[in-house]
Image 1 (cartoon, rainbow, N blue to C red):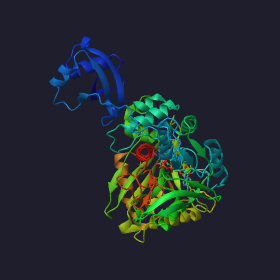
Image 2: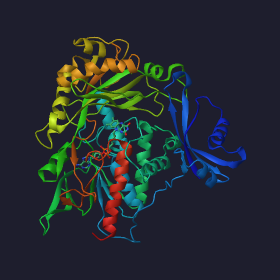
Image 3: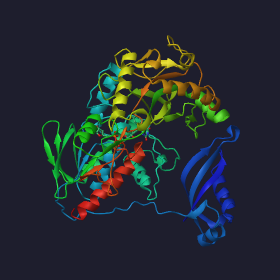
Image 4: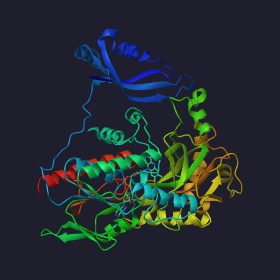
Length: 541
Ligand code: FAD
């Protein structure tokens, strides 16, 4: 089979236009095309009056070698790559060694656990939170009644931070082994819509994710894996070896329990602050890393659809429009849109009492009234939090506490209209845009909870973005804050063997360890780390 990419057809093309376009592009007669399968579909909306669909297609031809030779210089035509996942190890029949442990049941831990289970290593998966249905009730407790459960919320529990999300499933990591394909195929097997395999920017939405993580849990358990909920890891048991280095021997739990373990995947996510503090105390190598801070901004989805798709706005093939914006400011800061959620809502995403954090989510239909996106500024340790490895967490906490107070100390988020923000006055009333954040929004002045350089950068970037997306800087657009959990503020540094630089047996993984940023990249990292663990166990190390 050959893979043909970059094939463009008009938005409303009839089905028969595709084989005709393939034949024309490959310069073959219709009878030479034996079969074709769409692998990916995106769109090119740069010309709003002539939006095109852009396809990648696998084609079976009567004589592929001839076509390949004729189009040797055409980078859009090549042999179909082998995207099948291949296990790197397999536990011997009846294996009864010390079981690997995975801490965290987010996308990274879920895929680390799944791959280990599929290879026969019967992992134990620990999570401080609860199974997803119970967790959903706790999360709604904050959204509906302003009651936070610090162990069971948007950040913590089965499915991890991405469970109540837009469920965007794409990332920019290099993936020469097509591990992302393995992730998407497992998701489809667990109940995700099959279009995630072909859409260029696939997404699942919240409710489907809930049932999928349950189906994946059942698969892991059927393969001999085991979940333990409300099992928070509070300490590591370390042993000093002859050469002075340390080796992990087990895990102490918050309830006094102890689990012996020689291989531990630490996939605790970017909000596991007490765990990061414990690792730092125990001397595990940690370094600060850049992340971003800012607010969520909301517009009616119809404004974004019109700005992006012009007369084709609302076309069912295009769905709700997304956007991606960036501007480098005179104060040497970059403002950019982050985790854009078309047709969704802004959610309360704190995991700590007395703090307010915003994020975004949607359903598969993306049919809610507003579009929302993080509007954030990149910050880095050298310039903004040079005081040590955990200083980024201190900064996050400070801003989140200020937001809590500015919101009225009730988990309401502080909000301001763009018009008032640009005019430098507190907001006292809303215009056309009604913010979606629950339990509620307190109109105020966002300068109460953000550093001056962020405000300055927003003031410059908003009108620039307004020239790229009409009405982006409309006076009635609403900003709610603060968005601080954009990625991990630390990296738990690991070596080429995926183990911590100075603690053997500890495998930092996923977003919390600084090796992923999003559901798909966290899941891919989980697979890689599971493979490293399996290879060491198989080698008797
Ligand atoms: P997490 O998903 O954070 O999972 C970590 C797990 O570890 C948690 O379940 C936690 O309970 C557990 N844990 C923590 N500490 C301990 C401990 N000491 N002991 C035991 N267990 C512990 N990304 C996208 O790609 N697309 C999106 O649309 C998207 N939307 C998002 C919307 C929201 C509201 C949020 C909060 C995030 C969103 N993200 C999205 C980001 C995405 O969710 C994360 O990048 C991803 O979940 C990271 O995966 P992870 O497995 O590394 O960590």
